[in-house]
Length: 542
Image 1 (cartoon, rainbow, N blue to C red):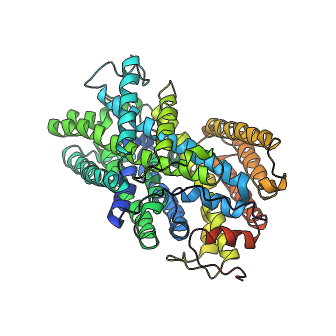
Image 2: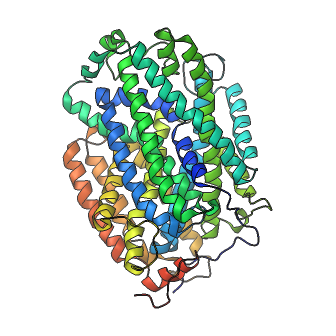
Image 3: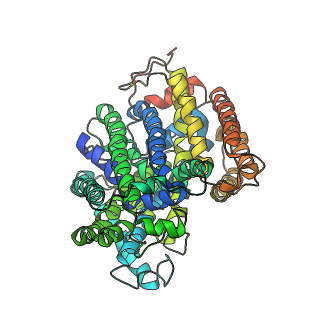
């Protein structure tokens, strides 16, 4: 009966509640404004042309929808890595473990990606960090990258209050520099004709606008809101602060990104567009696009400032992602998805074992992986997939505990929750078939290992929670099949056009959503689980 209730393995050492509201908001905004602002507008413009602005607006709306879901959920589980527990509470151990692995893979790759972004910009004034004529690290670059990642880990050995103070100082800079850059480029190099330069035709622009949301860096850049959820266990007042931080950070980051995208589109030299158009846009110093544009229009001091920011912004994001990744890994141990020896916290409240594991895993991501753009598509899809459990959990918890105290109660949840699940499915789909192949093969291998290891466990088959996870098979298989027969823009066979395929996905997602609600863990078991987090749930709650 208690298959979905993990033991509390934290021991006597616990995380310190030293984070305030401002610290949470700035942690979220600081995580959002990293390498995304330095590279995202370039790749989004290449994919969507002038409609790149629409990519950011639609992406912000999608992320805000997810953020509203978690604004209600997160305060009810004020524990590090709350998403891991949310997947477990209504869907059983196996789904909880799968979502733990998804989250771990998405988090563990971000700090290395931000380090790579720093070195990509730095290669413009410190040649030799990248291999010639590629965006891959050289041997020397690999050595510097490992040192930088190590610094993130060492910094995180401080108590959370000091980590957030370091991040707060960096975040004010990270907000100011993009806005200053947008203002100076608009003043110095404004070419309104660029907004009428199409990719090929209007339909291609529209398709590119949606694809760029997943693959151009839009979603990757706006996912910072999740840090308020992951750091809820170290917030002084999570029931008040988490909803405000989640929603407020999305609005702030979105405003910054829309401003820099508009400035980028207007600042590109029309001669560069006349030659190759948006899809093949290339100019001198393109590996540092905003610094190159500033230098080209004669704002040398801004170019210098941007090279400095190209260290601070990604490094600040890498630092805070290392912080939250350690907390997510900690939660995987609490739920039994990872070994218990990971669940070690020192007397200062620092999960030191998970930090060391993240450092070792992070080094792997410095190996010859695809470009920044390909990696952010993978990370965005993995992360959105992990957070797609939120809309399901919201309705499951409301059904099991309708009178549970909720500091923030989402209006219209019966409509907004399934809509959020559909939108999440679209974002995963827009990342393309190649990304889906990688994600699903990885999950299949992990699930097979887990199933095989279950043969040697003492638990009965049903106690592992297989009966709660059947909705995953039609979801994953249907998503992959529609991608395979879908448009060639996304790597499919072209048997189903872009918008009809989105319609078919919406039908699939809605069916799976209600199937997951129907097959959820028993209400009584969910109530037992929620009481572990301090929620006042009577044993016989209606």
